[in-house]
Amino acid sequence: RKTERCLLRKMQAFFLTTGAWENIGGTFLKNRVKYTIVYNEFGRIRRYSKRKVDTCMNRKLTELLDKLEYEQVCGKTEREITAVVYDSRKVIPGCLFICINGANFDGHDFAAQVAAQGAGVLVVQKDVELPADADVTVIKVADTRYAMAFISAAWFGHPAEKLKVIGITGTKGKTTTTYLVKSIMENAGYKVGLAGTIEVIIGGEQIQSNNTTPEAYMLKEYIARVEDAGKDTVSRGAC
Image (cartoon, helix red, strand yellow):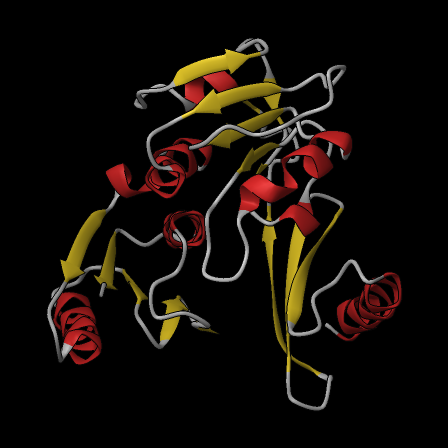
């Protein structure tokens, strides 16, 4: 563990220096192990987790689009996707970039930039301008945020279909109810993960929620991690 922390400090220094690491946390892949770091307010490592991953987890584009209605604007669908990304700062060659219209930024405005960075596929809901020589596939859908839910589920192998998922909705009391459900189910012998508006609990790991409602990609990743941890049930509070 001491050696791991030394490695993480070196990773922290490198990525903060290059600007490739968000100052509140990040991930790093080494020897097929994905390290996730969260810092405290003083910039020190507050906690970290590690998870073995399949570095050859590339998916076929057709597989990711299987349950979606879409228009193929240009390019080919016979592509291998290296990652699913919705943040232009995290684009890697061969990835699928989902253009999300957010509160502060519109991903469609970064279409030409991410194509130049090597993104293989753009998922859009409105027309975008790209260089004439861009080797990129453009998929148009009615709503990119809605499409992200299906694409993310396919990327992680539809983890929710392998678990019992208990969703809690309402105006007040959702968070309290998720903990009650978790406690009841665990006392009944189930192995339960929790994805709430305050935190995510996967085994002994607690992850603070930055948003009360995470993006679909993050939620699917949490559910996949619940499955990887050997759980059979997830309690989820939603807005």
